[in-house]
Length: 571
Image (cartoon, rainbow, N blue to C red; front, side, top):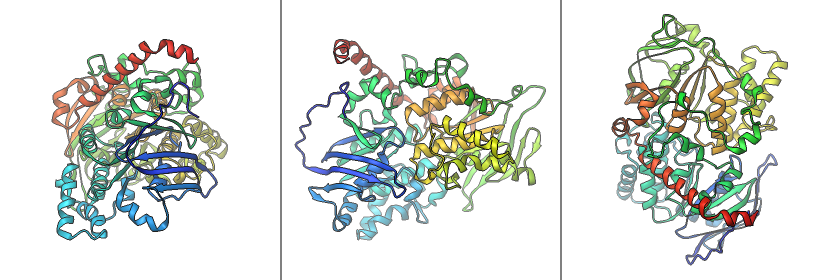
């Protein structure tokens, strides 16, 4: 099934085999086939990137390798022996698996307890266990959080805590599922250093090609549950046509940076980039107008400071967790109707807590006004009619057993007639690339598919205020680009929480910078993007990101220049 565009070199690996998969299929209990005839060898010390569309089978492959999902057909060999029940305990001491959702593997009262848990279960002496646990926390920059409850950490911090628990076990093989999702740039750079120093075999599932660049040397691309490419990572990323074929073309992000690696100055001065495959998919006129018309619109725009006043205001707002940890402190800001606002800051700055307060899910002290009305009492209980929030972890907002019902849930609560609901559900599932998913179970979707479902369900309700908490986490590049185009058409007041500098630059005009529960700056997005002092001071340094962009651009240009004749011959 390998494309001629990327001929696979004969692999000559001298190190022993860690895993060998022979004719592996995996079928879920509902009958959906996730893996199809996988033949794959992984050798000691290899550093492999596993790539592919959302739903292509990447997480299922990781579960098979880690022994969590025995294959329906075929066999898995671990260190040359079939993976039997008797070998599972040995495998679990030697193979560490970071789940896509860290909450699935954090369950102890404190972060330190979680890191100690595996060590003590594997009978590591208590003194040695504590030394290894604290060393792993230090490596992930979490020494100060050792005695905090995991659920009081930010999502990015929880991901680092889960990885610390795995690293403390010193596994021979490390399997990571979307490790950079929801991480700030400083945490991502820290993770990159830790993984580059890791001496074992690395298998990394990610859509973050900029992170994988320089970390992985081999690329395995899945499509519809089968292996479509198995080649060198550098060879894959230099061949843009193959990236496009698999929805992995991330080069639209290069339009966020100029030739010097600094960012452009605000969304008003650029068009949302459109890739050739999306033009083909949507027509030359851009996004499907039927879908754009179904998305929330605003009336006349009201800018901050106008005579008509503000649409959303927070004045002296504070919030503390039950253990006394202050998450928000004296937060004050105003937003005009239809404004597009970015909330940025390092992991743990309070961004997601602020989003929960804006949606009425959490409540603190101070004033919150929406359209001039105090948010309290019955108005707060009905705030969901006006404010839509897509959670950082979309699994937390899935309440139905069918995808169609998930999109319809809010509409039914709004009192829409069923005939209108059916049309809206079909339109939103089409927009999300989830046509035919009406009867699928949300919990059985991939992380990226669930994110798209949550977006569809919230946008279907046409909220006046749309809050997106890390909307691109877990999405493949093609879906990211499609989302970027559609959100550019949404005219609701937008609050975007993201570490994704491309989305911030393309979608917002104004940026609030948060640090330790406070708003420390309020400035135009264009100025924020070029202020390197701010980036460095608050852990948002994009230097590594920009350097990778430039190097990959050079690789693609070299390929284009040097392989014109070869490409013509292959055609």
